[in-house]
Structure formats: C-alpha cells, structure tokens
Image (cartoon, rainbow, N blue to C red):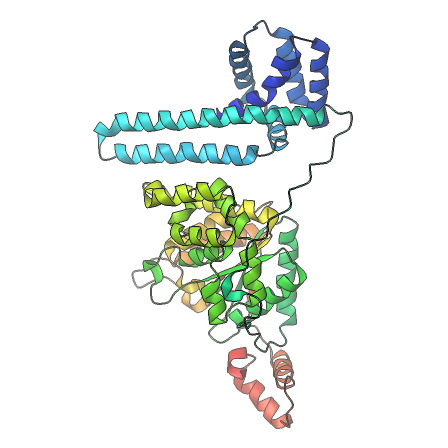
Length: 484
C-alpha cells in the first residue's frame, strides 16, 4: 500500500499538470519514464491517461491509486519499473524505509499489548491510525518532490546528477587536537603474507558491493588479533574512505551482556572513540577518520535506524558528541527530540525489527563509507549478538561491508546441557552462503614457522645464530604470541 501510494504520488503531477492543458505534453512525460528504463510504467501511464474521465484532483488521485493497485500484484515488471522511478527521486528510499519501519513498530507494540490486555484494543487502533496519518504526511511530502524529477527529465538528454553540497567538516575533538601525542602504537608484525592477501581479496570484493563475512581461527596466542590489526591499518592506508570499527566479546559476562560487540562497533561508527584512543588501541588518524564520519552516521541512524539509539547506541552520549562536533546542523533538533523520548521509543520493539534497523543503518552508511567490521573472540558471543550476526550476513549482497570475526574452534562446542554453541548455526549458514571463508592460523608448517622466526628477529639488530633460531621455531611452532 505504501509503495503504491508513493508511486502514484510521483506520477500524479504528470497527469494533473499536463493532461488537461495539452495532451501532447503527456507524451513527453511518458518519454521520461522510458528514458529511465521504466517502459512498463510508461505504458501504464499512457493507458491510464487515455481512459481517464475524472477532472477533480482528488478523484484523479483515487483512480490512479486504484488502477496501479490492480496491476501491482500481477505485474513484476511494473513493480521493478516503479522501483527505478522511486530511486530517481532524491530522498524516496529514506522516506519509504522510515514509513515502513514506523508501521511495523506500531503494529508490534499493539500486538504485544493484545497478548496480555484485550481491553487495550482501542489503544492499538488509535496508535495505528496515528501512524497511518504520519505515512500519509510522508506521501504528501513525496508528491512535492516529484516537481524536481519532472523538471530534470523533461530535457532531451538525461542531465548529470546535481552536485552534492560540500560536506561540513566536524570540529576536531579536544582529545586529539593538533599537537596532542598519538597514543596509538604499531606493534611489530611480520610474515603472514598469505593470510593478509586472502583478507585483502575479501575486502576488494566487498568494495565492489559484494559484501561478505570471513573468519580467522586459531587457539590462544596464534596471532588472530595481531593479524587483523595489521590488516586494518593496511586497509585504511590504501582506502581513505574506509571506516574500521571493532567489537570484542567478553569471557566473563558472556550471555549476560547482550549485543556487546555490536554496541562497540556502532559506538565507534558514531564517534565514540575517545576511550579507545586514550587506551592506545587506535591511532590518532583512525580516531579522526571515525570522528569525521559522525555527521553521516547520525543522519543515517535518524533516517534508517530510529530505534538503534538508544537500544544499542546511548542517546545522551551520542547527542553530546554531535553537539560538540557539529553545532548548528539542522538534524540536531531531530536527534534531541529522539533522545528526549528516550527508551520509551524502543519499548516493545521486536528483536527482528531491531535487527533489520541495524542492517539498514550499516547498508546505508556503507554507500558513503565502505565498512570493515571486526568482531573479536566470538567463542564468547552472546546469543543475541550471534542472531544479529546471522541476520547481517544474509543481507550483505550489494553492500560495501566486510565483517571479519575471530574465534577459537576448540571452544565453539555444546555446553554441559548439550545446547549448541550460539555460533554453531551461524557458521553453518555462512559456509553455505560464502563457501570457504576461514583462515586457520593453526595450519603453520615447519618451514613457514621458521620464516616467521627469521622475519621477527630481523626487525632488530642481533647476533642470534642458527641454533637459537631453529630452537625458537620448534618451541613456538609458528605462533606469534609464543615467539613474541
């Protein structure tokens, strides 16, 4: 219903504005649709105009919606053409996502109330009616947008897209202002060329829109974290728009700390970098890159994930960062309003709806900034985070996102009651979807282990002889932590 209403609103000016005055002008608008590759929609519009008897705008609108609705379910080509038309109008994707999200959330809240209190039925109806009224407002706003579309496409040639307004650089945060020491450090990292090459290949595919998931496995001390740190630094050096965010599962809280790795990832993507920079886990350049993406992240949260904050991103802290970085931005008012509503806005929200909003946020943000998301120590993942990872992994097609997780295979096993590990189902699904996406750091043969030892020792002047080097290689078995 929402899609039909939006498409009808987009086509309506062509009928109302041109048909009564000059029927030949409608031919030009049909040509616009054909230029967009929407031939089926063009034929529908011409057919509708030929059979139209109404004269009043409201009556024309009703007839147009009814005719389009009648064709909608049975004509897949028409639906595809409608998608092309909506994508050509700036802001339609965000409007549609916001509208459908609000409807789903309102219905979820209402049905949750019905499960315990049938007397609340009146409240449910009232809430749905209010939501539908908001959707109608969005449709009216969409109608106003179509004038720009028609003006652009009435030209003989398709014009180039309008230049984007220059982005306003956020204020540099005080904790990394010019002259402050860079607390991030680059540990010694040698060898692992084969593993780095495989990760680079996965990132290259993701940068072309082939979003994917990969895993680095191995026991304690095998260098999983060090490998991904080196990979992330190298990737940021080569791709200046890339955003890297990481989250770590906790061995102590485990299932008692839901969404922990994703809360950390989303926090970094929305500018929560001061504590990490102070701890020396990220460099000054890394912190500034994430801080610079704060405006895009906030606008994406507002448009595509209205309940991601406060559910996974604390609203008060987000508002404080946004006010510090971008005072005077027009979207700050919307953010303040969202924060003032607080947790009440997310009460009763179904888990699947939150998962979808997180997916929408990450996919939308990746259009401006490709994303490398690192999830460390997944052997301790909680079930909600495993579920969210499963959801994201199935929705990466067409997105510039690479998710890399690490875990210890020996610890991904059923618990004492025989319940499967939260990661087990996720790994099986990703194997079917992505194939061989595992890097096992335990697979180190003797020659490779020796090359690792030689490369490590050569990072500093030394007089260590062949006997020592061979003994160290045999003792460590190629494990970086042991050699370190």
